[in-house]
Length: 104
Image (cartoon, rainbow, N blue to C red):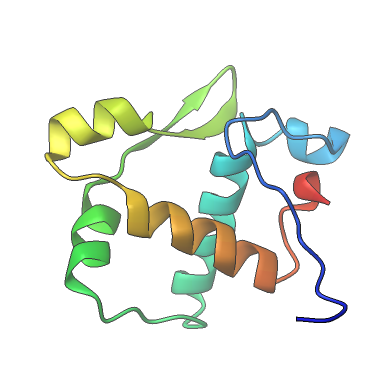
């Protein structure tokens, strides 16, 4: 673990990049959009039942003209599952792709 860079992430924070701020309401929305693109481009294919349920049930919308993902608490009540695997995927894949400039 020598020379390992630790990057703190708070997905509920507003995005820091002025360019990203025009499109995404917060870091979670930015990561969600990046992961969505990765699925569409065939870059990732997840074979996990819990994650599949979470991906199929997450809602996204526009708020003030910017992408936003459904609030975790609302998701838990509506979908009756916690979005833990989904949030892990959003953070991990978006960072690996080099996206989410707001967290660097």
